Length: 391
Image 1 (spheres, rainbow, N blue to C red):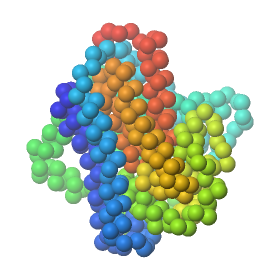
Image 2 (cartoon, rainbow, N blue to C red):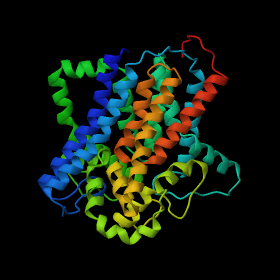
Image 3 (cartoon, rainbow, N blue to C red):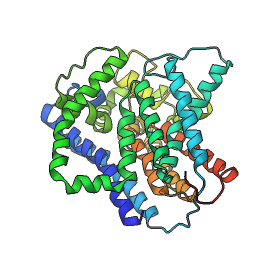
């Protein structure tokens, strides 16, 4: 895939998140209350503040595209590894996680059970330390073996269903849109069909949320219409606009928690991979308990990059500057590692592993992706042969 085509596909992926930001911004301005995690919460800040928050929410995606273009223009000497090993790792981890979810471990709202040190605990630790998604992305983006790609996509979707979540379908959709340019060309060429797909989105979203509600045995959604779900829930979850704005709106009241927030709280999130869990559990848990006022510490809500910086201001402007450097540096490092690995579609791999981070601001997520890439690089160097194979 040449540089120009890569940039076009990257625009498609990033545009879904930017469009969600735009829709969320209009939704909040029109209704006077937020969407997403803070749906129906009243807006008490000015329209000018909302506009500035909107710009702040979009800026990370502009930075992401800038980094993408920079790396996609460099002609790297690609060594095509035998990706069979990545396929085996991805499938093994996906099947392991699916089996664990069947046992009730790790699904949303479930508690960890089992005896520490037991075989099942070891499997759970492995599933947590090495999430399947980065390895699946490396394999799908680098492979030309359609059957292997289809099986991997199927396992990702099955895992999402068993995990009682719809996010896996959106994520796999992003992978396919980037991987296969004919999909986007078809949508551009057949405007009528594209329009029909857009018109069908609200009822499809409504059915999807009904299905998810049944999986979770939870109450029916308060938003009955598909359009309410699409604009109020889906766009609000894809975009962190409302999260950023609501955290800013409540920033004065957050100073009472200043002593509960360590200076290095954002870096601590990145170290959860190594089992470092201080009293400050995570940024997402802080948002859930002290901003959303949730009742269950097992849950978390995304802060968004803007929200992370606002929470940092509780400590000092220097902490905010440090965390901004961590954010920018993490994305840069992900692209650097991906391209140094010399895999096909290296920039696409980095894009897909960082685009959600630009939306949710969860440093533990991008840290795990970085660790997983380093592990994959080590495995490829150690085991995989550098020759072209059907994988």
